[in-house]
Image: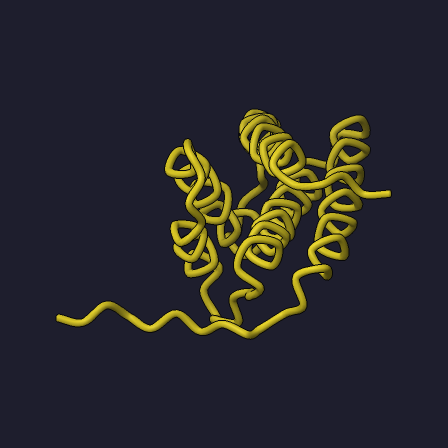
Length: 137
């Protein structure tokens, strides 16, 4: 069985900063949502923050971003980056992305404990990405 082709688009490597800015916006909004007890907003902003972080890494290192319908494919693309410790970060990203359907579409509240869990995962992933890339000016 041949591996599934991951759909990508070439992106100018310097554009990674745009994705870092998006990640920062989602991260800041996630923290404000936590402070006001908006748990669904915490969750969705966490997911979008992580996806933007992933895009920043892919653009900076490989000059591509995922255009597949499934965000898990973007996480799979991270494996192409030769960086120590990336495997555990890919696992964390997949755990974050896996919550998107629950947060956005299931007919139940996204609870505070779930929001805090995804916030912590996202915070670690976000800090790893920002420590791995040149800083935003």
